[in-house]
Every structure is written in C-alpha cells, then in structure tokens.
Image 1 (cartoon, one colour):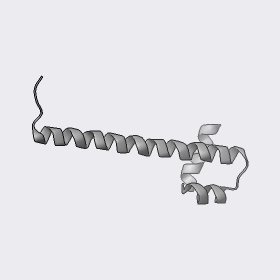
Image 2 (cartoon, rainbow, N blue to C red; image 1 turned 90 degrees about the vertical axis):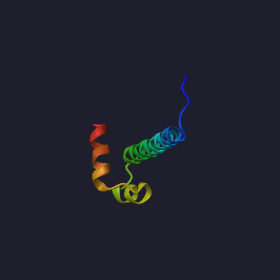
Image 3 (cartoon, one colour; image 1 turned 180 degrees about the vertical axis):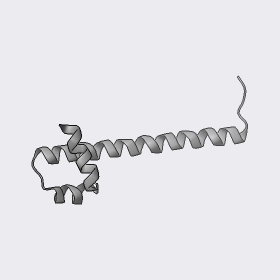
Image 4 (cartoon, rainbow, N blue to C red; image 1 turned 30 degrees about the horizontal axis):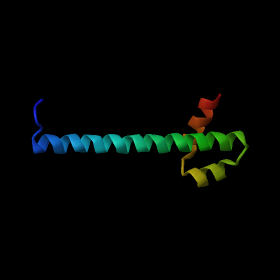
Length: 68
C-alpha cells in the first residue's frame, strides 16, 4: 500500500470534511421538509411555516406539490 503525501492527506481530509458538511446540510433540509409537511397536514398557516422553518414560499409550494 502506498503512503499518502502530506498534500494528498490534506486533500483527502478536506474531502471527508466536505462530505460530512454536505450530509449534515441534507439532513437539515430533510428535517425542515418533514416539519413543513406535518405543519401543512395540521393546517398551519403559511405565515407560521415561513416563520418557524425559515423556508421561502416557493420552497413550501414545492413541498406541497410533492405531497399530492
């Protein structure tokens, strides 16, 4: 097995870090989507969904469309 140079290791570590960050972002997005769906199903006003999730009206509309 070939040893990595310090530059390769740094690049590898940065790649892992970016992957973790992307995964966390996706998880947060999925969580917000789930909360939005539950709020919509409960009949929450769009103004409340906007306030509590930080999503835009367009994002909420896309989620609504997915639910149909």
